Image 1: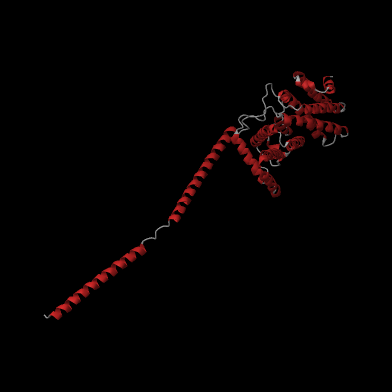
Image 2 (image 1 turned 120 degrees about the vertical axis):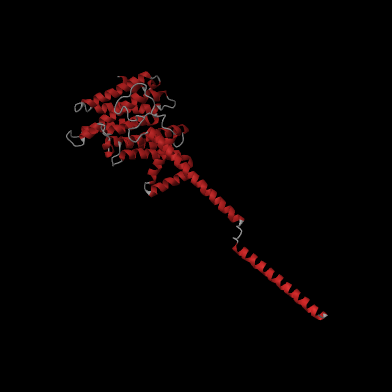
Length: 377
């Protein structure tokens, strides 16, 4: 073979090797390309962090929901333990209904009315508030937003409305249900007053709320609604409202104003009897109202007067005012002696109890001389 032929064969061999290398390189490139296409794209780091935080937030939300359920079960268990649904109020709130209290009466505050029940009652009151007319609710919410420091005063007003509406409800309710809510409302009102009065702020507003409460309850006591038709106790409905005022009267700020309002109403009622036909259909109701009013004053005086007088900040001017009105009511009732001598006997018991309490307290003996003379003579 010549030298030229050797050169041609070598060139062909090199060309074949280059073609094979090129094909191998192309095959490897295609394989890598397919692998890259089939492989999922790498996750963005920011997107991965977002998903992780979303997952943690969801877990935390579920944990909070579980804690809320546990708290609700605990509160319900506490409520059922203190106020069982199948029985009357466990604290015997309506004991001594229409009866004089035994000696050693404690104040109206129940130590077992704890913070859990206060919060539960307040939630219920707020729920009732939301069911009111939209305009009134919006206006009150704006008031709370603009004056956050007056929130407790607003809660007092709401609890007063709740208690009165509880007595105004026309649909019958169970005895235990009424007793439980009435007890919680009274305790909440008393606790709110004990917190608000020492501050000396918004006194006119608080006095207006208390006077409104007394006026509305006294009016309801003299014209009981159908709410008590399911209270199968054999007692008249008005005694339940009387008992509410009696319990609220453990606070001197409420009790003294209640006596003042009731004594004024007795005088007005006595004058109405002078011009009323005994056979009028309204006469029996007015008679029951007169008896209940006089009895309420007797309860408040015998239960709390000595406690009020020994407390710091006792309003002696208000005491003199309602003592004078009681004596005026006694004279107004004396005009009815020819019609019904029982009224005179009832009022004599009231003034006798008042004189007894005044005689036992040195601070109460500093009344105006004319009041003392009329009281003891």
